[in-house]
Image (tube, rainbow, N blue to C red; front, side, top):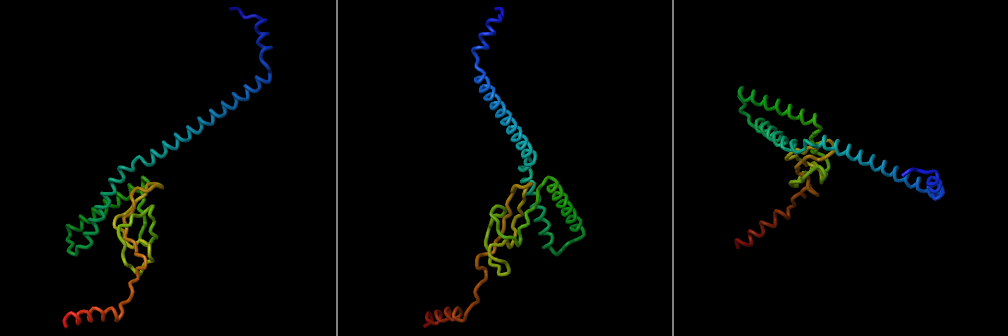
Length: 191
């Protein structure tokens, strides 16, 4: 069908200028919203990719921490053993070198050991395994680390398993009444 000047004139008269301006504003608003949504989606995808790259080794790292724990236990056992021979010395030096190498590799991938001894117990970093009486430490502070904890970048990889100073950890001094009570009972039983 041929386009005629009459059809064009009728189409121009049928469309109100105000309607076109409103429609243009609406389309512009929809376009800006679509661009903003696309930008937000791009940023989320970049963040997700960055996190995946940083934390992808978390499972492997958890498994390697078992190796680090066993190396530490081996060295502690060797230090307790006072009968160190020349052959043992070379083996212990090799275990120490392996432990240092493993620590270096972990550090290179953003895995850090949690420094816990003497710090205030933090449930987001520590797992309390037991409470101990220790008058030299304030109540609620970490007295001993039973298993090292680690973080990967800014996230917890494994909590440190710790012993915490008990509330009111100072034991009250014994009084004479404490000693007398059991003796008087023993006299009563013997009579």
